[in-house]
View 1 (cartoon, rainbow, N blue to C red):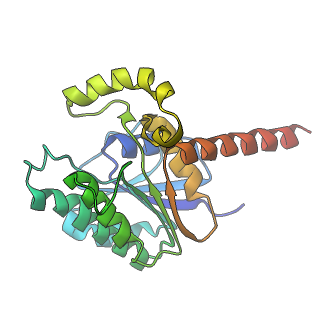
View 2 (cartoon, rainbow, N blue to C red):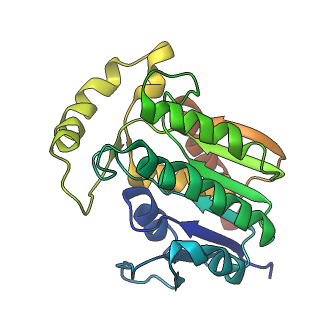
Length: 237
């Protein structure tokens, strides 16, 4: 029996991280270890480790996880950062890059980082500019494989209240079918769907740097579903 793929998740309390934890329930082929500063509310059936530490000591926690793959789902909001550029960068840039370096030092050879659609180091939006700068910096850390995931609006339950985002989640399913061509990348995506894509990417072996927006994520999930159905068919035969 082959060794389970060890995934270290940083950012397990948010919508994406919570969905990744949920998606790992019952997966004997995956061994998930989360690094967090506080206890996480785990779903029924979850069999995983949660290593608690202050962010300044996350390097030691990541090393203890001995990851094959590091998934960084960290991120704050402009409002939670009190609209302070330094406070926002401290999480979305400095901590993200620090975790990436710690993961490489711990032996991880594959990094999956959650960014945002529209990320661009030259964007007028401060948020998207920082995301673009971080993507560029991550490409220089030295991972044999880097997957940058750029979702549009995330749909799913959050622990904190975001009234405008909640309204957007209601409208998004009506707008998504109208977004075609170059606009398709702005389609919304459910947290659970994104989590499945992240776990599919974690099992990819090719080296290089890859950027995934909605059309690519959709194709990835369809390929995965085809492989699973084909594998089930062979098992039955």
